[in-house]
Length: 167
Image 1 (cartoon, helix red, strand yellow):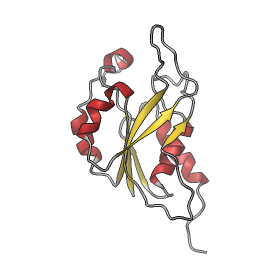
Image 2 (cartoon, helix red, strand yellow; image 1 turned 180 degrees about the vertical axis):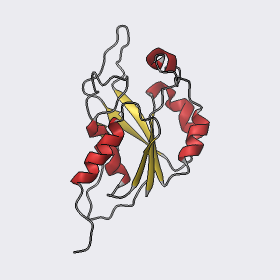
Image 3 (cartoon, helix red, strand yellow; image 1 turned 120 degrees about the vertical axis):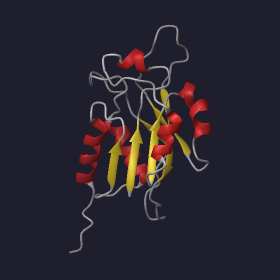
């Protein structure tokens, strides 16, 4: 299975958070979603205020899931706080009734001091891999690699999977 994850700069936030990066630019989400549709499965992180903009660009068979942040950055004069992020998901390996059911949300604290705003924690990544039913040998593309943490999490996750070889 070929899987992609996209965590682009959120709409209207590129210059604010990533102006030090020469590749910094607003993302054409319609083009991005078209690119993601070339994979067997994909996920797209976004901000809750932009969900109403991006969701209509997606195929009808997507699911909206949630990353809930018990510890999140509270900003002055922002109440209620932004303590969750939507994750649009499409595809994945079908699970059998014998396999554990994966929730459509994950609770994981934000990361701090990773060198880039919005770096995803390992717990979020492992949940995403579980959502897709990923197995060792599946191909994983992190479209916006940032700190490289999601790809490192995939390597760690694969090492923890049971061997699927024939004895």
